[in-house]
Amino acid sequence: MVDSGNGKTDGMTPASEPRTTVEQKVDDLAASVDKRFEAVDKRFEQVTAAIVEQREYTEFAFGQLRTDMNSGFNRLEHKLDRVLDTLTGTSSPPRRRKA
Image (cartoon, rainbow, N blue to C red; front, side, top):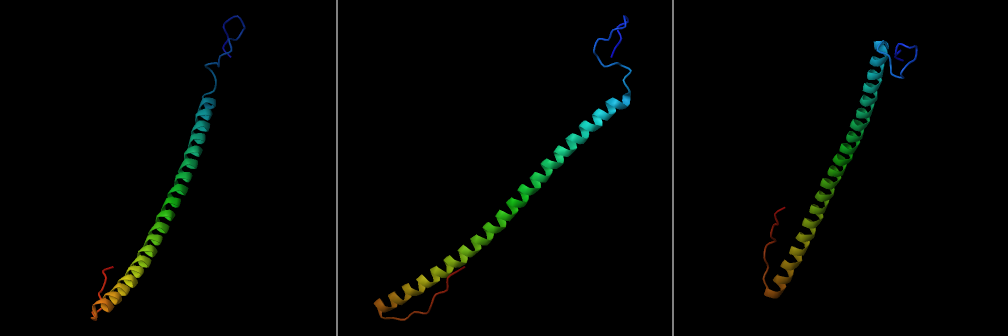
C-alpha cells in the first residue's frame, strides 16, 4: 500500500512491490495463454483428422459406387444387345464399355 504521508494508505499497490511479483503474474498469464492455445491446437488436430478420415471414406465409397454402376451398366448393355439381336435376327460381337 502507498503511504500518503499521514500514516494512512490509499489502497494502491506500492511502487516498491517486488519486481518478481509482477514478473510472476506475467509468467502465470503467459503459461495460461500457452495452455489455452495448446488446447485449441489439439482440437484443430482432432478436427483435421476427422476430415481426413471422412475424405478417405468418401473416396472409398465413391470407388465402390463407380465399380457397381459400371458392372450394372455392362450387364444392361449385354441384355440390350441380346434383345436387339433377337429382334433383328443377327448376332453382333460384344461391345466393350469404357471404364
